[in-house]
Amino acid sequence: MKSIFRNTHIFIIALTVILAAGCKKDFLSVDPPNQISAELVWKDPAMAQAFVTEIYNGFGVGGFNEQMLSSLSDESLFTHPNRGIDLVNASTINPTTLGWVDDTYGYNPMYNRIRSCNITIERLTGGDNAISDQAVKDKLLGEAYFLRAYFYQQLLRYYGSVPIITKSYSLDDDFSVKRATYEECVNFILADCEQSIKLLTGKSLDKGRTSALAAMALKSRVLIYAASDLHDMPAAKSKSSVIGGYAHPEYLGYVTGDRTARWQAAQTAAKAVMDLGSGYKLNLNAKVSPEEGRLNYKSIAMGGGSKAPGIDASAASELILARYFIDRSDMRYGRANGPNGYHNWAGNTPIGLLVDDYEKIDGTPFSWANAQDKAAPYVNRDPRFYATILFDGAGWKPRNKVSGNVDPANQIQTGEYDLIEGGRQIVFKGLDTRGSSIENWNGSWTGYYTQKFIDPDPNIIESSMPQFVPWPFFRYTEAVMNYIEASIELGQTDIALLWLNRIRFRSGMPAVTASGAALRDIYRHERRIELVYEEHRYHDARRWMIAPETLGRKTNYIKVTGKFKPGKTMTAPYHYDTSIYDYTYTPTVETAQENRKWEDKIYFRPFSRDEINRNKTLEQNPGY
Image 1 (cartoon, rainbow, N blue to C red):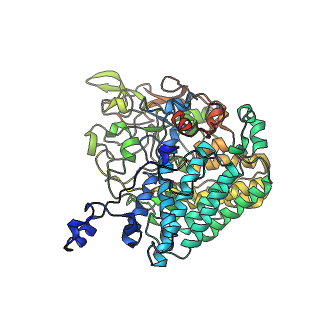
Image 2 (image 1 turned 90 degrees about the vertical axis):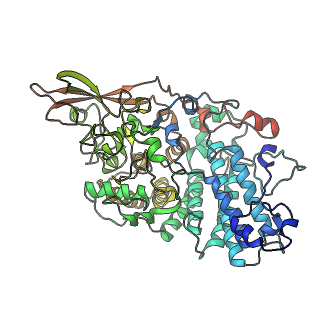
């Protein structure tokens, strides 16, 4: 584990500090002017705050990476090859070939951040060497405890249990540390959350920094995971021979204890968040209109970061902790994922398995076996569909602002259509396909694009302009979902239905009535739709142990064709028109880009061979 702790912290003074010190006669006689001793840092509130602020960089850009976790689940497909995502989805990763691992949950990067948290906690609780302002000290400590808990939670849900490190190691320390048990890791994270809650309650912190409520939300997430099938060893062993044959089940979950008590703890923690927080429009007794439901959902996704017509800035109340952006260089989500016909990169495109799971507006399932559904698949669907997915014929932004006057109708074009061009009939490949005349190499393979976190403001063109939509690390509805899940598992059907239907009413969907296993399935479907692209599905499918039949499916795409109706024609430029075209929609299983296959070893990610070689006491995960 030596690589975790070997980084040396050099504290760079801000320009204002240098200027302030510049008037001292002996300034140039001290240590190099761009460095400062740790002892002085922890006596100065501003510099101590700067140190803690830097730890937040462990959050990265949240889930707004060019490669998204959604593409390691049955939400999306990553368009571009050779990034390691396909290796995970094909279950071919191993300790020497890890596939894509982002720094926000990478083993070494997370321990580097944990080390910074440990330094903060040591310095601020070390007696006379710390800053004297108790209020400032409490805030910084509260943040450090939360951040350490968060980083350990990232490790825990990817790798299972990990070594618990509570001090900042020096080079002469012994770096061989065994994995704690899963239960010990959970208890450690919860203890840090409690410390953070205690220190931050009643404290006002800047936007984008943690809070007591964020620590409560983290506690809720950790407890709902802890109660789930994957981390209850009797349940996990009954569903997986790989886990059943593992010599150290205590690293993966609870080997003893009362699972009902774990569900009760999860329910209590979720309710505490609900009582203290304030969600968005979750007091409804009937469904809103489809258009209001679409705008409600899009407003939540914008998190107060859009000026588009109809977007409600007060939906920012959903956010408990978010990553905000002030610089375009940090925020490239729209460009990375938008349609190539707008000079974007189509990075993580929705797959048909996700699109097909959106219910119809009356709450019944969509089915390609239904002739009416197949003839018009994008009509009368769950309003959240229209705030999440860009499909063939969907209206979008003014294309002429970026691609020229090639599409006056400003519609997504992911099909092939008959068209009259230059006096003859041709087959025109849509502007947002891989046969497009505009950046065809960046076209979607799936026939869809995402729009959930893309600002709908028509004045913002993703390929050339910034958008400032925040990433939701924790939002109120996640806690509500956790509360519903725990209530279902405890047999409290009425409570579960009350809150589940409030979420559906907000989105314009009708109430559901069910109990037992049927209600569990409905809840899981609702969580899939409501929290899509928010980095939950990857973990949810695993902790529920439904990955073999969900994440292990082959990806399906949509092929769209438009043929002239008898006696009808259209002259270029093309636009979607059901009075002129007969459209056909053909879902197609395609394995050329990715050939997905589930193996149970993928429930947990492997520790790298290098890390195992450094720390001989670090036991590998099952299947590797």
